Length: 266
Image 1 (cartoon, rainbow, N blue to C red):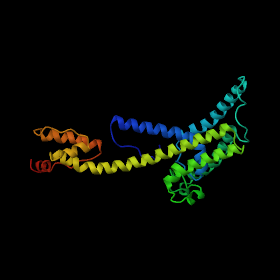
Image 2: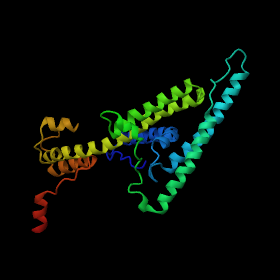
Image 3: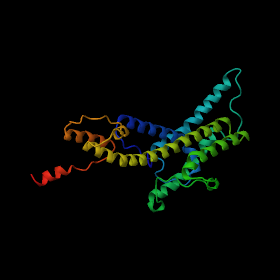
Image 4: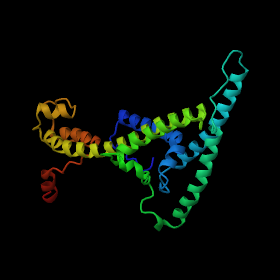
């Protein structure tokens, strides 16, 4: 995923977490793409990956078909209500609006791709609509994670109540609002994980250095979830072991000064 820094920590659990985060991000991004592209009309040329664009467009073709077939089958069942509530715009209407907007965005993005001086950051999602900045104590992530999805949710319910949207279109927008919130949270979490691991590496470096010298405390070992080693363990084995632990935290230990002396005085 572009612009979403992921974990650098090795190990099967960290790798599984990274894969699952990518799967959740791709799914929620594809569902929320029609809504987000209307909320962030100035997004960069590389903000959406080809996979997100493909699945987002595919979804807007399949969903109207699925809802249309479902509505027809419901009408054929005796004693069942008369299908979705009346509204001027249904899923087919939303799909047409999405593809019309995609044509406009495509022309805008294509110009940026041909002339790269037209944008400074290709993965920037663009500024929110101006009225979101009127919210007291608003910030970039608060708007993305809370206020924009909440606005879509309220708007969908309001437009359904005044018969602008039918129930299928309104329910899709409500689900897309939830997916937009989850996607934005995944973005924030990816950045937080990257910065958190930088701090963890800075914290773990001195502890691993003390472990290599055999001067660590019980608290040091507990903080890195490392068991104690025999005191009479060979220093080279100890160093190799803790070097491997250091690699898991991307910590490079300094060379042993005694090795430098040996290289200078063979």
